Image 1 (cartoon, one colour):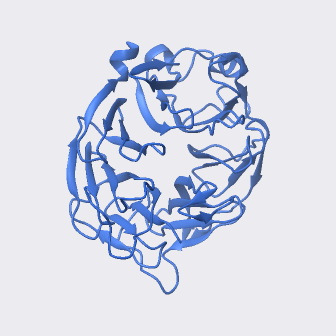
Image 2 (cartoon, rainbow, N blue to C red; image 1 turned 90 degrees about the vertical axis):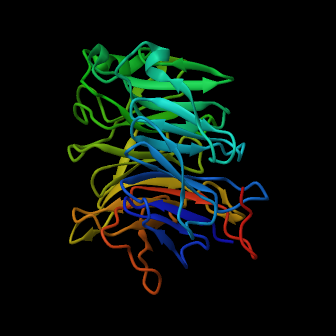
Length: 365
């Protein structure tokens, strides 16, 4: 059975309960919607998803966006990322731009602030970019220290009620390259399956592909900071902001992209090769905003090397792309010929996958 797909389309809360055949597009309260997370399968519920806006609001659906969504949180600043706990379907986490971490323990219905990373780390300028619930059971937060200490990458870890940060704990080639740092340096995405393949980070801003602070770094274990290695194999075409890094079915294999049409690949997180111009041209270059890996198993469907990409061109159109070959090639997922058209002025910002709608509708809470 095809999984449900949820999309943050900036001016739409969107969902397909049946793998792309039909879409529900809700525009009510859909202003600056940039992130989304869906509840994983628990054998009971389906269609439960939360969307984040840049004004700090989170909205929730329990029916695949078939009806207007419910406001469940108003934070003090922009929601930059949301992550559902894959091991506990009741729990979902949200991160804001000033690195406040919120949690819901009831499928996204109610929320509370659990960590203020600026206060916890005594760094008043920390920037939040990504939150992930990883296979070690901990909640990981990624971003940067802002102007503090000339700008450094920031990694936070929250487990068993205790926050721990790596704001200044770096070593190896990353420490060498940081030097005096660069203002507002930030990790925009990270990938770590905890399968022995290590952690790979991609930076939103950097010095150059071959000098100073590099775009991509890898370490076998972030608790052993001397192991940080800079990416090799990148070329002079790498000049734009990092957008995503995602893992693969094979331990240690990663894929990454910047704000252009190329997609990069690595079998160890250090040495990289490029597949040039994978993303298409639709009047102008189509560039990615976010990529998700459907993992080895998505709602009973074996999905080796399968990914979805939220992308847009200069005109803020186009849509969602799919890849079944480890991001060597891509094709349109929406809008696709014979299926739902692309909503007017929509911008594909983020994606999530959840259980498909079952016969008779979804259970709600």
